[in-house]
Image (cartoon, rainbow, N blue to C red; front, top):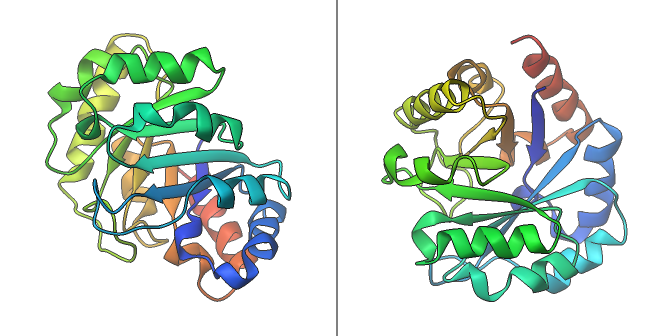
Length: 218
């Protein structure tokens, strides 16, 4: 099943609760939450207090993407504030397997992310240990960028490995995904799609519906 995960990084924060309810009503089943620390990536976004506050207004699955240095330090805190799936960057920690184990121990789904410069070989040993691999299709840390087409080759390679090994690992793509290129991502093998600007600009409800229609056709 193909899943849309709208990124609240592009939402209007003065109306955040209202806009989350709107994407949920439109049929989105995941909500993508980008956490940036100003160290692993240059920007700073938001942290546990924001996640906890919006957890109280929605039952949607919280797809929390940690773009932070040494994420293993904060796994319990993000779990406690309502993350359902915790995705961390392979490049941000020296203890990849230990971080996965911490997420699993807390009963959350575990995801691992690779940036555009990271080869598939780096994430391959962990494919059987995680629920999801997130392939960044832009440089992490900034919204509104254009998709890097070469990153979809990684999606194809990872999908091939997953199928060859009989795994059921999801592949998520994040960065520059719009209505006019979402089918390329799905055809490459992604089944979870993050989109921020293309969802939260203008008519949110209609945008989600259009994405779901497009994603159901592949």
